[in-house]
Image 1: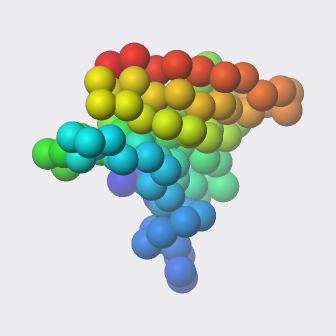
Image 2: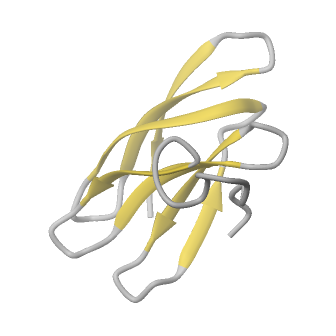
Image 3: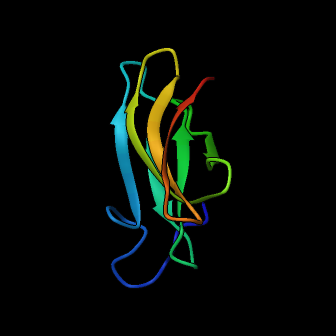
Length: 89
């Protein structure tokens, strides 16, 4: 939900990119919205989507999702400074 829907978009990287899959079937990834901003999402094994961004983020990136639902990664803020994060369930 919210990903761009133009030609060749919304069906895979880079506009909707699953980045990590845990052993329970949850998926963490990123998507690009209509303003070319990257946002994070978590899809539960049941198919529920939750979107999130870092504080003041301009773009979100992920590295890993573990079986407890914790996500690690980094984001770029409006001043072009990178920040690491840990998102807990």
